[in-house]
Length: 307
Image (cartoon, rainbow, N blue to C red; front, side):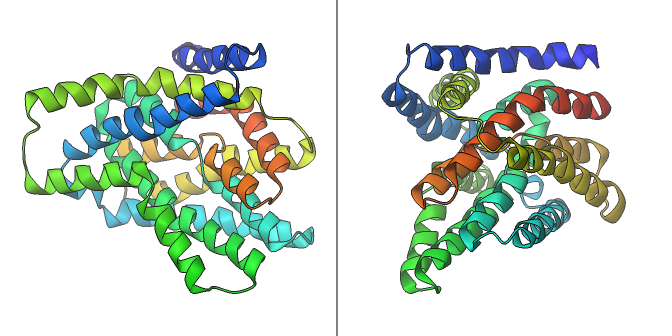
């Protein structure tokens, strides 16, 4: 376990350096937003495209893998919803709490970290996890928040969901990679080198950007943040482990990658949606902060069992 902790420390050290840079004012909010945009639209997209273009389509659309992860996530989502409704929360609050419980920082943290620890072969399962997160749950929360605001599913809501899915650069990069892989075309050397060079910036840039965002977050309502962190860091990977190891026939390596991906802390884009719709953003902020800090220990334990 100590060996795994030492492997994870550099990743979390970069997050910590980003937090220090943000807390000391070396990077203000505009600088943080600019770095995040670079990583989101360019570096991470280049990394995703290269991984997707280099994979066999059978590795990208495995119904067993997709079904196992989706079932596990829906189960945790439902449990979190029941807890939220028992606390008499509004629909918008319930939606963001459920999102916190199942959407981890797969793009900015999981993809670069797990491929580095487990090898490029981990990219296939991670891209499938991202597909479920970005297509299914990113659409679902937009629908729920829009219904909470407008009272019904209107054509405007449908358009908004379509824009959220189609306009996401990570989805576009994965889809472009799928098409390239389907055409079975080699990447020309200059293009491959350009994408590799830009993709190499994804890991340090993303981790530093996570730190900057954490420096701007508060730790209010710690009891709720603790529950949501428990749901994300414990319940979600446990549900995925049960599905991939017991209910579905998923190979051992893919199962390890999926369990590790499920153990990642709450994703930052949940806060963006909560803030946009004014749906308990401080609560989401606290959940992101607490889950990220605690994940150094919890993720170490899970990776020690899976690596």
